[in-house]
Image 1 (cartoon, rainbow, N blue to C red):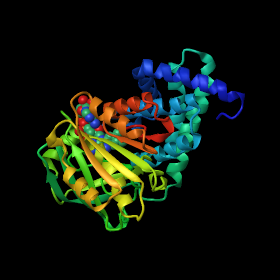
Image 2 (cartoon, protein in one colour; image 1 turned 180 degrees about the vertical axis):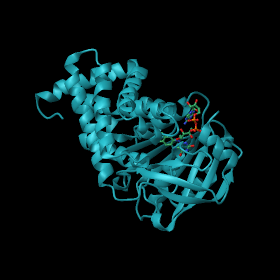
Image 3 (cartoon, rainbow, N blue to C red; image 1 turned 30 degrees about the vertical axis):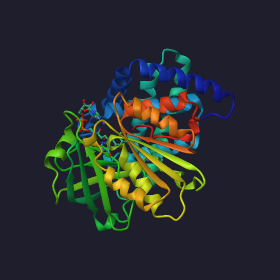
Length: 373
Ligand SMILES: Cc1cc2nc3c(=O)[nH]c(=O)nc-3n(C[C@H](O)[C@H](O)[C@H](O)COP(=O)(O)OP(=O)(O)OC[C@H]3O[C@@H](n4cnc5c(N)ncnc54)[C@H](O)[C@@H]3O)c2cc1C
């Protein structure tokens, strides 16, 4: 959408729309829902957990896409992300017509948020790009819309996190995702309430899957998992999503990689470290495990075993005393010597660490984090 003079004005329009969406996300989401479900009320049933749950992810994604247009940054990465979003939306069983309706609704919602009518043409082009790439990739993907696995073990720890081990059904082997990705997940106790969880082991032929789930206060799904998950439960998964692990394996062995984990953000980084351990030569890799108390260092002994068996790998627990400031400071110390810095954890942890890394002069291109984590 942008190689000529249109590029500059598109970036300006994207920046103004981004500011408008951030100023009043509720108006933006409401007008999208009113337009979409006004024209096709039956679509509400495809989001059985209610639209409230859809709202946060929708706003985060809109902000990410508008931000990428505004910065003119990495169009292939944006297209890749939209493709993943389309494949992930297959779990809602949307038809091609639904994407056309969503395109119209998105264009109108963006235009409704835009104070300047000159930005409306950009809103239409952006909505067309988003919905058409999503529809195209959803249509092109021939893998099943979802796959299932059976819980074989749960491991309880003193803190708020449970480790759940599953075995994928034979038709979902090797497990269908890329290392470091996260999966939309449906547990039997909470029908319709899809949540993202990140496998802590790389994809494999045996169908082994491990998820680390932390109970958040009042959490519908995480609470149900901690209370009720037991062997024999069958869980459903959508397409793999995200690109945290992309390119880590290409960092040369004479350089260093820093993995910065907070809470269960440890899971995808653990999976990346385990995938590296299957190869011969690796970059020097340090994992910082941020936790808000000793009881929350639930996986430290396993990671220390990994470090003992692999001289290129090192793990360092960081006990957090402030709002992730100790972890951020430690990350800054190590980042100067690292070629790539991967940050994974709850939104406030990731934001604090990324901000500290950027302020300390780490080049933005060295930092990787998934856009909606
Ligand atoms: C890319 C991605 C990967 C993720 N990977 C994992 C993972 O591997 N393991 C894991 O345990 N979780 C992971 N999550 C978080 C997970 O998807 C759910 O958001 C979380 O389990 C809460 O869902 P819930 O139904 O229990 O809470 P809800 O019923 O949705 O929310 C209950 C309350 O908790 C608040 N809340 C929601 N999420 C969080 C949170 N993450 N931290 C603090 N408060 C919250 C809500 O604002 C609300 O007030 C991931 C999220 C994303 C976006």
